[in-house]
Each structure stands twice: as C-alpha cells, then as structure tokens.
Length: 476
Image 1: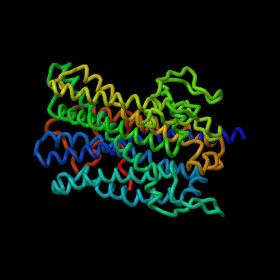
Image 2: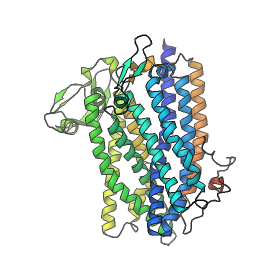
Image 3: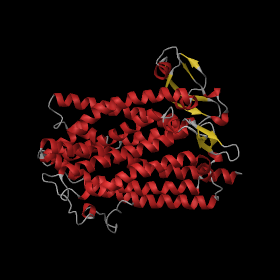
Image 4: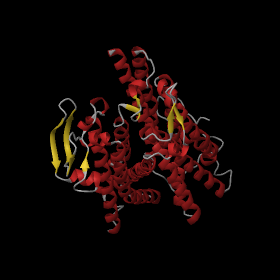
C-alpha cells in the first residue's frame, strides 16, 4: 500500500514537473506572437525601419521558444497514457475531444503559416506575410482556448453524463462543456498573464541594453528604446487589468470551489467579517494556521466585496476532500505580491515617462531587469494554486487523483522521473542559454534577416559550446 502511494506521489510530481516546464513556453509564445504581429503592423502602417528591426530581432527568439514549447508539450500526451490511463479512459470522451480540436484548429493554423512567418518575408508580399504572422498569433490564442476549456471542465465539470456501466464521462451538451462556469475567467486570466510575462521579458531585455550602453558612455539605440517603451506601456495597462481579472476569478472560485478558497486563505472556521491572513503557516494536523498575521475585516471585503460576507473554512469539508493548504497558501501570496509589484513598476514607468526620465533612470532600469522572471514566476504560482487546489480530484468532486493513476511500478516511475529531470535540464537548460545569448546582443538598425534558403541560420550563430547544431525545428 505504501509503495502504491509513493508511486502515485512520483507520478503526480513527474506530471507537475513536465507541465511546469512546458507552461512557460506556450505563455511566452502567445505573448511574443502577439507582439510580433503588432510590430509588423506598425511597420506596415508607419514605414519606420525600427519596427522591422525589432520584428527581425524578436522573431529569432520566437523560433527558439516555440520549438521548445512543442518539444515539451509532446511529452505530456504520452504521460496521459502511461501514467494516467484511468483518467484518460474515463474522461477521454470529453478531454480527448477538446484536445483534438486544438490540433485540428490551432496547431494546423500555426504549422501552416509558421514557415511563411519565419522565412517568407522575401518570398511573399508584405500583406501576405503580415497575414501569416497574424494567423500564427491567432493560432496560439486558439490553442490556449481549447487547453483551458479542457482544464476548466476538469475544475467545474458541466454538460456530461456518466455511463453507469463503464463510469466514463460522456458528452451531453458541448456548449455547457466548453463554456463551463470557470472557463471565461481562466481564459482572460491566462491570456493577460502571457501578455504581462512577455512585456516584462521584453522590458528587461531593453533595460539590460540601456544599462550596457550607459556603462560604455553611449546612448542606447532606437530599437532598444522603442522596445523598452512598448514593454512599459504594456505593463502599465495590463498589470492593473490582471489584478481585476484575478479578483473576478477569485469570486468565481469562491462560488464553485469554496474549499480551494479556504485553503488559499488558510481559514479553518467559516465566519463573517473575516480577517485576511497576510502571513501564517497552515497546519493540516492541528487544523489551525500558526504564526498568523491578520488584518481585520479585509478577508470578507476581498473575497465577497462586503464587510459582512461569509468566508468558508476548511473544517466545513471532510478531511479527505481538503487540498494541501500550505502549498497553495504560499503560492497564492507569491502570485499576488508579484502582480502588485508588476503594477507598481508599470505606474512608476508612467511617472518617469511624464518626467522624460524613462530612458535615463538607471535605478528603474535595474528594477526592470530584475523583474524579467516576475511574470513567469507569477504564472507558475497561479498554476500551482489552481491545480494543487483542485486536489484530491482530477475531475472536481467526481474523480479522485488516486483513482486516475495507471497501475505503475514504483521503480519504473522513479527511473523515468529521474530521466526526465536530467534530460529536461540538459535540453531546456541549453535552450535557455541559447535564448539568453541571443537576447544578449542588442537589436541593430537594419537587423539581419536569415536567408530563407537556410532556416537553421536563425540559431546557427547562437549555439552553445557542447550543443551539436541548432534547436530542432517545429514538428508537424
């Protein structure tokens, strides 16, 4: 029994590890594809060379990020069959169909126009090339939509019937399945997270090159200043919107998954006029939150928008239906803290812009550089909060995680997990090094565009010692 329990833990950790690595790349691709579409559109509208230079600069990074996203995503498809075959068999009639829709719509759209986008600027007209860039960007958004429809259905299942003979979830109403109660909130929240993450990555790149230019006693080039300015505009606009979207998502979660909210907040007793726990350590054994630092009334105000609103406590739910509160208690607070920090940086940039100091403040540039991983870190913490908070269920309230796992052998699970960690560190660590070396070179006026006859030239000059050749191309 203990062996089976440990195998389950390792299976969960393996999936969490592979998804945690993977989720960064689609988010980067979604935001970067939209940024590229904006850059090319501005170039066509204004004729300014700087927008074309930035497009050519960032499309090289996009090719690396997109490739790593595809490679890391393929692994999870196999894990559903090898480690979670019971879940696949029971929920497959719904989740499998939704994922197939992603392939038939988003993936075909991206694959069909990616080659034109990467290597077709000198082969097709400007309008057609811009259309290809827009199609790839739209494809990333469609992909996100189907993935989140599937995941949201697992969180708030609707539109299904359960086959009494097999226990399988059978589709009954596809509109109810797709547009389940949490789907719109998750879609907006994830989309804004992708845009915000890329805004701070682009901003940090611009800040890095402005600091380098300052140390050399020079002025940063126009492409560097433009990319930094655009990134800070995005941060100033999207960060506050993300906070509002997160608040709406929280209200939705309170309605449909109250135990998750209780675990996030570290609340054990249901009460009105509840306090907000700024800090503490939830103790699952003693059913209390140790070392609690509270702000009176703020919990009810935040969670219900009313000082008298009732906030649920975990004691209202059976012990075997409570998620592990300590993990999501801290992941949620890290996410929220980073969200407010990103909003603060965005507002700071507006003030510096007003005083004409946006490009001359080294303190702000250092802060912007340090904020490079903020969006992706917040995204990962949000994913941990969402997925760990769903436990102990794979399909919320209907199918337990312990009942979803394949009959796997502990030794095999341990070996494959170790192999995944080693391979991922080598492959994606190398990819990250290549990406950082690529972004370590400042965009130039008249930025080089790789020859369409040699697609590998996108990466050939940025390989890392010990890496034989460039990153693999996108698969079919």
